[in-house]
Length: 195
Length: 316
Image (spheres, rainbow over the protein chains, first blue to last red):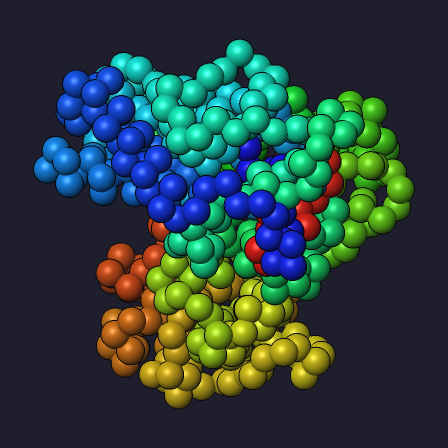
């Protein structure tokens, strides 16, 4: 869920770091192996990152799969802006890139990749968006952080770290490529106030 | 962005770039099996065309339908408009039907402005061409086409050639291209330059051959004979010889220069068939881009609770 963790200017207050660059690296390596194990290999896989930070995560997972299996998994991005259920509640938003690999998604196993799983609404939008693009054999979900507080019956298949949070806290994911460092931090109250 | 798109001058540089970037994302929709996005589901777009137009109306209709909006076409012929209904009463009818956006074309300059600012309707008004005044979505699709071929328009030289006097395309392009940093030169016979051209942010020339070798873009305009009530040039043949783009003139262009035309074109008058069908010509692509740009405009005006806020680094 990008909305709650996209802190506008947290440069002064970096919060509590829960995953550093090495932790993120290890989590992605494990996720990559789990994807391969579950899929029994890399064939027919397509990784789709949800912009903005799902995209570098999908690329990193693809690199790890390539080094293990020697097979380049197609990687793309899937913007869900127009499918969001809160589209009408905010000013019109800029679109982010959607890049579907040339082989398409029909009959393949699509792994959606996002940074934080929160309410589940982004993933619901992503499932709708996929529906307009093709018919995958199966759709799986990989997230770097699962912070709980689901509002829809949606769960992740591959999780980097389960991070129990309160609703007043914000989880901020920074990744090289989009940001200058690799880090997952929690900002705001560490007590469960108001939640 | 403002609530209405009446003039290319309504767009700040950030607004214009947001439209171009959004259009770039929407253009890929044309390659998908399902050419539909849900963004404007339940919104109503009325195409209110007081003046004949095929390509602009179809382009707006395709754009609105691909965004899942309901489209109502309201053409002057065969409607209450031909029975003498006023613009105000038409507007009140549209308001009563619950239109979210009105795309209006009118032969009178300023009609969309009147519609937007009179308080008759609450919907967004998009100018689809008013008289000899403006046609902002045409300028946006032209800028989008240039941007795709040339990258940034900063410092690019654009020659707009022909009947500037009757051209709303020329005015909107001059304003928007200036906003985007391009240098515009209008090339036209003295009789076809409008009064007050000194106030436009452009250079002017009567000599096409002198302008062509420096241009990055050559945009030919149609001679709008239906709006001409007088002798603006001696003969079509003489106009064609001095201001038409033919193979000989095309040979003097730089390698990367593109040739554009807003259509409908009159082959043999302002442009010869070999130029219109050459590799430099992006005239057909302009039509494709028109749908993407109009989708971007409708989405940014109607997609959210209010028109898009154009600031760089928008939070997702």
